[in-house]
Image 1 (cartoon, rainbow, N blue to C red):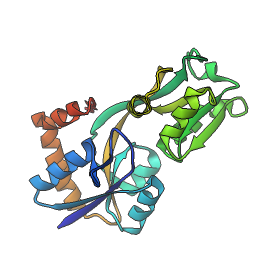
Image 2 (cartoon, rainbow, N blue to C red):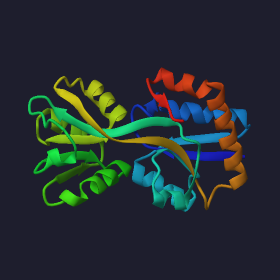
Image 3 (cartoon, rainbow, N blue to C red):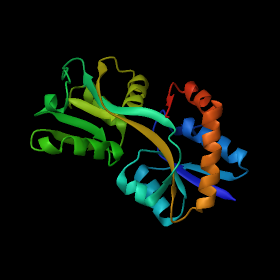
Image 4 (cartoon, rainbow, N blue to C red):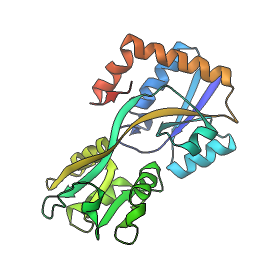
Length: 228
């Protein structure tokens, strides 16, 4: 028996290292698959392609995934894995002095999308649509490069992704301005293409990994927090 997984380049959660998908998600999945004696195949693609492949049954599962109503209709969810948050980053050369969404009126906010991140930003700004401009690019690093040059007023991002991007790009004029929403990341399985008995087996093993503290040990290596 085999489960095929897909993810995106989403450092520090998932990324390629020596031509192999690495990061906490891949490490957790490989350990669970070994424990339940199931082969796992993990590939990295652009996110929209991963979603399309899962819809077609070319892969059965995706990670790391935030929860929303549309996804709950299509996927079985694992227990929550990682606790993180969405928030705003600012350029210290031109700080926005973030104090709630109203403080961003008449500004341009950069974000990565289409994604759950951009979807949340659009919901957040719905009442200010004519006053807040959203700039979307298909990767995070582009937005942080723009922010460092003050080409956008702020960036809305996963906090851990943003902090990792700042470090990777060696930027010293960007700071985290404030939290907007806490969230958890999950592994999800296509309801159409994954036997429910296999999902239950996987999730039970994952729950036991959390109870034993092993999952927390893995996440600690990546400076990430386990969700409860």
